[in-house]
Length: 64
Image 1 (tube, rainbow, N blue to C red):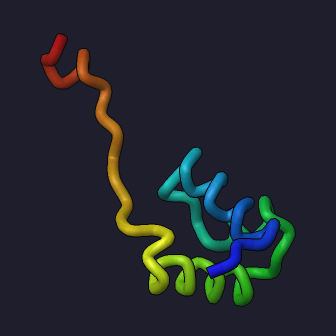
Image 2 (image 1 turned 90 degrees about the horizontal axis):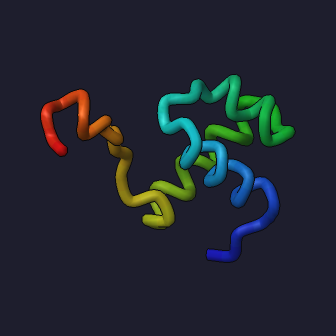
């Protein structure tokens, strides 16, 4: 899969905030919501995005 500037922008935004809404994501990358959603689904289906994860604060969960 060849990534264009919109795909790369979507990936960057998701890395910064994986819980961003599609509407906000679309605004930030310069697309309308429907094409943004289609691109996101394509990135998931092609396994460019393999999963979503939560990053924990080690200190707050009792780890040093």
